[in-house]
Image (cartoon, rainbow, N blue to C red; front, top):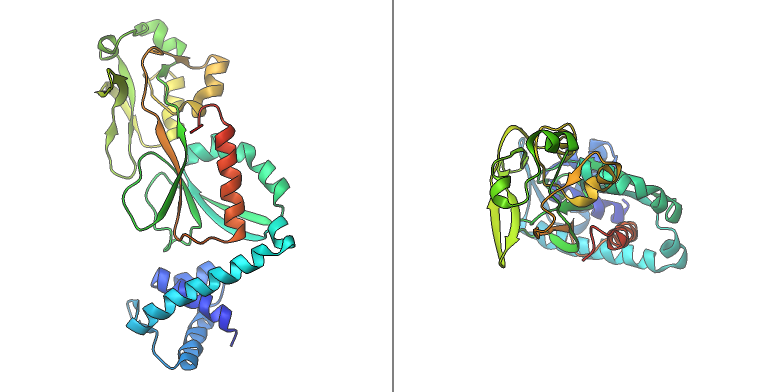
Length: 301
């Protein structure tokens, strides 16, 4: 039995509560996962997992052993990353989750630079504007816009996204350009609905130190960032997106910024991890992405 492999398999089973899911994440046959867990239990002399036909749960001894395994595996990862060749060329696959719009506008255009620096790292990109279970889904880090819910996960804010109010020139030519919030209330919006909560987000502005929320009527509501912006370009109504997502469209004249005299609260941009300790390849990606956002004029801290 490879004890380190058995420890890694055991931690995955505990985190996913599933032999099958652990096997999928580790690219191993389910039978191999089961055999390794059995051999590990025989080696340590205690039952680590309770098994039923429907679920897998960790025993009291297994929970203690799990914490030690996580620490040991992290120490090994740190030891490997401290070697000069590992520090210069970390390798392996990382699983990153983010929204489709953020991936399309910010991450994908710059990812070539990341591969030039770290050619041995493969990025497995998941796209979902919703809450996911990092541990259950085997995700190494999540890039998220907006306020984060309280959880046991580790979060680090890396920037603040500027927000803008804009519409297509065709819409403004037909309906006029609002110059005050009172005039804005007479207009139509493309409303954005959270895919996570179903909540419709109002437009927000800072007036005399307070946040004023403006809810607009609109015949179209969407829960995808790319569709939201496209609907604005097509003239279905006024939108209030992150500016970095529409900067090129503004420059090309497809969208026109309005109400620029009003300050809009920025939106946090954060990285979320399942654990405080991370592998050298995950650390390389997060440091690269943090530097990318810090250089962006619409995402600086």
